[in-house]
Image (tube, rainbow, N blue to C red):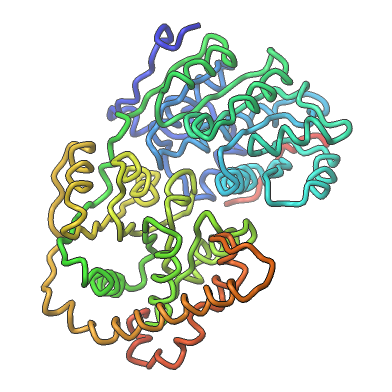
Length: 470
């Protein structure tokens, strides 16, 4: 069926919708309790619109903005169907395909959190992890597999006895992004390896021609759900800009981080080298920071994310590798150190905060060189942002300390580059950056700078439960 012929279900919130609970949507008591424990007070728009259709065994196309709660929108119906399964469930019972390793691990965590009380077993399968260990985990018959396309196809082709033929659910999450990464052939193999009697949920931020083609090949009479315009930012997000001279950008960044001391923040920059430099600079000033970028090995990226999510570090410095899909709870603020070239990337970046109805803030550092990109952002989101009130004289009181931290950052980056060049027979690349202990050792030379003054800157009730049959 053509996408345009599906009947759209528009997610316009009414007073009645806002008052709906998960119980009202038909969610079983065990999962209602799990939602309560996770702090899900009420369904989001995408959850309220899609869960009843999913429980009614309909295929779904969901167009939802980032931070809308779509993972729970497909996880809850799958877990409820798993709980209701008579006899021993097939393995896997459901397959979720994700564009990136980070997103796969995030979805896995949410399935684990929602399904732990009913005995659901879930594993994440992605590149960057030993394939033999994954094959052993698959042999233990998990109920839910969350996987990146390439590694899932590797197991279909090479892991003895592994099949998706019995799976009853397929989820294609962030389908537009999967297809933009040239995984069409892998998706064809995955879809063709599964039974047509399955239920399929396709979620996407945009509806491209490739997504329409995938929809025709993989879904049967789907219900289309669209809860918002494509590039709208959420109403609970406070957005401001600060117009600054380029030469003082680091100083303004440090001032704003200390102005919101105690809040968690993601600082987005354009290049891996800037990620490294800013991470060193912040640590030199006593501000707890970790970083992620595309050149880091997967274990290092996951370690950094774990520290940030656990609150061990308040600041995450990142390239756009973190701008889509990562479900990091309670990010208080996003700082755009560099304004993105593509206005759509801005929406994905700021979507890391103000998620699932919570409040958040986005601060944009706009220099004389960022005006064109910034105007594109305002045009795309359809609103003029307000200036964040700052006195330049107050900000520049920190200039001397920030300048010293800048010198330390430059020196340490130079040392890292020299170490790479000195290693004979090795190709120098950005992927080597994390091998020099960037996550933990950057900033060691800055320790002497961190004075006490600088450090201040950083400064239910039990019930009988149903269980899934093993």
